[in-house]
Image 1: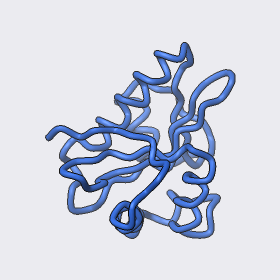
Image 2: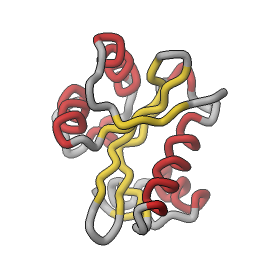
Image 3: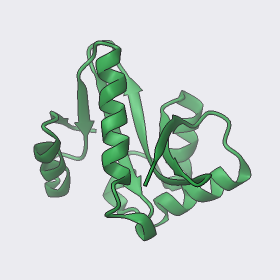
Image 4: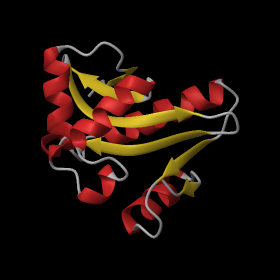
Length: 132
């Protein structure tokens, strides 16, 4: 499945709908420190940090990619429930890693302290894990 990763800067109405669906079934811990999914999406758009995976003109997964001076940080990674386990998250991670490496920065994952799923993802991807 060829998933194309892009920075979402000028979302269409369909993109907004897709982003809402991506984060609709996200666990509450994933939205922290934002009040809700809409606030997370809007912050990502406002800051230029929202990246998404697109397949057949639809957004299937998204994350926030912050480009820091010392390192880049990927957080709030979520894939739409109907398309999980198809490599979308892996594609987002790989592209974030490629972009960070190209910029000469290490990539870190960010998640709430002590979260087991995030620790497992960091271990599988060999990326450092830090707090949100």
